[in-house]
Image (cartoon, rainbow, N blue to C red):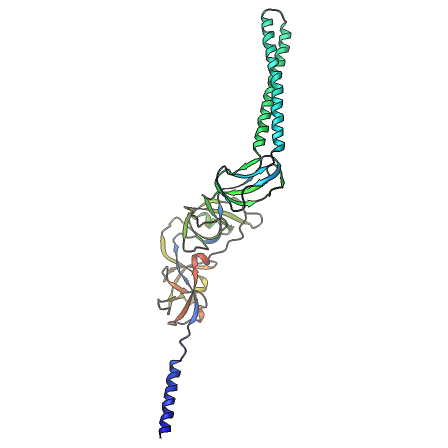
Length: 371
């Protein structure tokens, strides 16, 4: 009897241990996205590149051997800072020769001037004829012309000697370097490319089917892919008058208002174009993969604070290439299941995997950027 009791106690203990060791509930992993507000006048979203509004190639006005380059790629320079230097030996010799030529013709000019003054006195006293005076006058004018030409040539030679030092025209950053010390460069050959950073553009390439809608836009929102939570305001500054020959797209430049140090040249950004009304409306944006059909009506799975799914019907105002504009049924900031929605169920508890900001990731890619 005692043996039976002991066996029963052991069985009860093992059963309790098995219940305590039961595995926790496994939750389905679901990618989610946060709905963002769609402005009332929004036109379309594009991928963009941050570029300077002003960028120029700096070159020497004269040719020669490059002795030194004082900056490197990415260097920040100030106005008047030395960029590079050429070997000035030959140009200095030319300047010296030009000054010697000035001294020579200056002596001829002084002699011709004194001769003219003397013949003027003799003519007044009737000692020489008018024809003889005219000869001296012509000689003086020729000497004066040679003197002026020599002085001008000397000034050109002096300027050319000074052109052996390449200076920065304005504050900016070096975005390209095209020559190294020891290289012989020609006049006008680009040495570096200098970009101004106080005025930046978000540049997109727009297909011809979208250009009319873009022309109607008045405002823009720009977000860096590296910092999607920060939004910059902007306006369309320039639309190319002709399509690019290779890509058949139109380059659109959007001026960024109040750029800061977070904006670096060449960064990738998202641009959402807006109409005249810049105030936010109740419309929201969602990726197309978040929608499913429920009784012939679009619907989405909305996550509650405790990660339970709730199927909610929505009204779609517009379908676009990768996103849908939700007119009603959803509010900005709500979390929505982004993919695999046809395998989910009402009331199911899931393990959300944030996919990021729709504004930063679910953006219509534009054709490759061309410069």
